[in-house]
Length: 179
Image 1 (cartoon, one colour):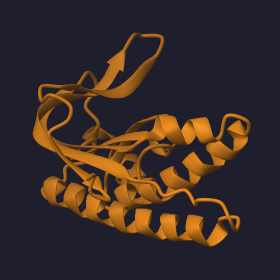
Image 2 (cartoon, helix red, strand yellow):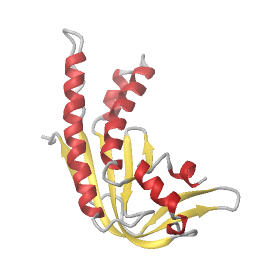
Image 3 (spheres, rainbow, N blue to C red):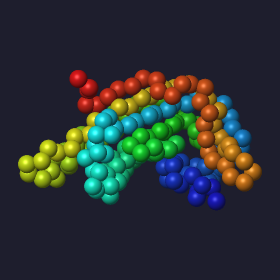
């Protein structure tokens, strides 16, 4: 039950920690200092217009983008909160304590930029001769502060959520740099 509930947004190692000791999960929520990461594709509206006649192509592109970004986050003990189109929201230090949560989030951001470079190279390599290859740019925001996190909802349905005391956003870095 615990494995199934958390497997979609925690790394396998984190799922095992929670499954081995479910008491680490506090029902109803707890206040913790956490680090949040927000990432989105710059100019996504223009990119999506390029795929007007090929929505499946846009879906494939987004999945190709989200997979390495998610891997970078989960490899550093991050929790995927949600995907919102081209945007990823993730956090650290819940449901399992992570004394190095801010460092892990920063390391994830650096790796995400590296993965973006690899994806852009692959897109250049796959480009049809005579057509301008897609070149994705991302923005990443990091923020650390106190919030309440835990199982919230109703008796019929609940999700593992956070209620932020910190405004979403915080530090933001774009890559490649916006000129």
